[in-house]
Length: 113
Image 1 (tube, one colour):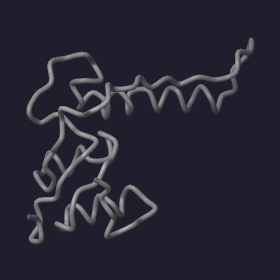
Image 2: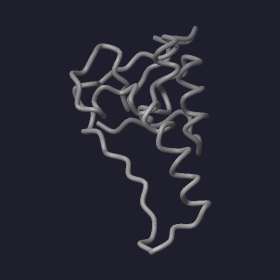
Image 3: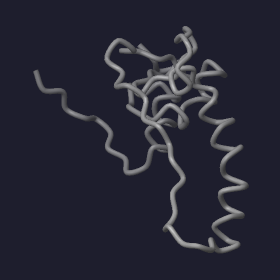
Image 4: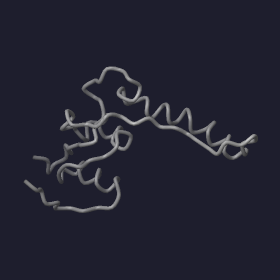
C-alpha cells in the first residue's frame, strides 16, 4: 500500500514543526528531535524499525601541520557533539530507554489522532 504525502517540505525543521502541530508523522534524525521528545511535544513511534545508529567522525586531511582553524573547530565541536549525541543511549551502546530518540515521530499537538 502506498501512502500519499499530504504535506511536502524541504527542511527537517518544517517537518518536525508540522508533526508537533499535530499534522501527522515525520522521519528525522535523533539529534533533530531530541528536545521535542524530552518536552513530550513528540512521541517516538515505529521504534522497532529504527536503523542502527551511525558513528560520527571528525576528519581532516593528513598533514604534518593542521591549521589553527581546523584545530579550533575540532576542539570546540568534540565536546558539543559528545553532549548532543550522548543524549541518545544507542549512540554510546547503552541499553535503550523508553525516552530513546526515534527517526519516526508523531506530534502530540491539538490535531494529533
